[in-house]
Image 1 (spheres, rainbow, N blue to C red):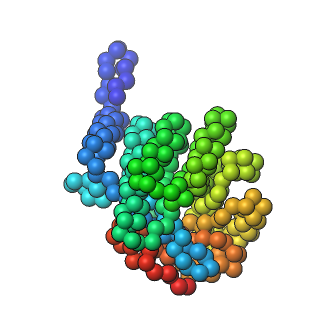
Image 2 (image 1 turned 30 degrees about the horizontal axis):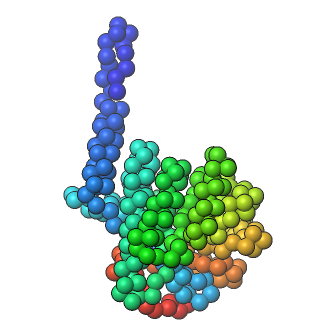
Image 3 (image 1 turned 90 degrees about the horizontal axis):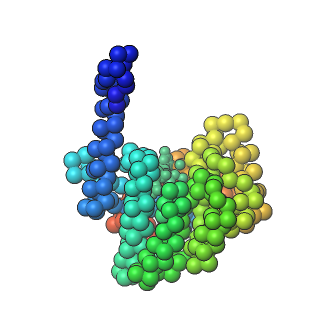
Length: 279
Ligand code: C2E
Ligand code: CA
Ligand code: CA
Ligand code: CA
């Protein structure tokens, strides 16, 4: 970018210009990645806190960059979101998740629901409903095998429109979870009105179980709210045995995190799908 100097001279600002160029290049590379199918999904198990049984898994996108290798989502999702490319990426992710579930089913592997992250921009773009419907039809899948993870920021904005969109998804039989719960601004009234099924409690609260004086009390409160509203609770980011034990004592429903399993490639989740983890 250039700023006008005192005498009208253009003063060159290299650092800002460099950022702009880097962003443009990244945007171009992302567009290329969409058109050339450079994305794969990894899957992270979500298990029953009591039995350890694999209940479902979360699909997490990775960009396989021809020269950089695996690029984690935090390095491109924000720009994808900002540039609107997230709508195309979201559609690709949905398609890939459905294709994978169908492939498992075709191979006789017991299928479990897959949850897909939906960005606020994709949610509000208005095309999600039709994409979900088309994918389920194309791969001949029951809606019960698909869950959508929305963030609390998806619930901000035109309340009537959001209600209609959500009830249409719910009417199809899709489960809806609230991702990173506790970090945003959703109200109890909204959780009830939008007929949310699952709260995925942000990793920060799981860390607080042992790291902060009120950690256990926070989690207890979330669990009792969930009980009143009839919601399932998933603790995200479970990294230690100690966290796992506390969460079981608190009767948290489901666990997800590195202690149980890191996100893994589709082929690696098949052994999980065939067996039951035992705590
Ligand atoms: P998220 O939806 O909250 O997903 C959980 C993230 O936490 C994943 O990172 C996962 O690998 C990581 N994680 C899981 N267990 C643990 C743990 O025990 N400890 C720690 N430290 N981390 C854990 P990942 O795959 O890098 O994804 C980061 C974020 O990128 C996601 O956070 C989500 O917001 C976004 N993202 C990923 N895939 C997609 C996608 O397909 N669409 C959209 N819109 N966003 C996505
Ligand atoms: Ca998520
Ligand atoms: Ca999350
Ligand atoms: Ca998170």
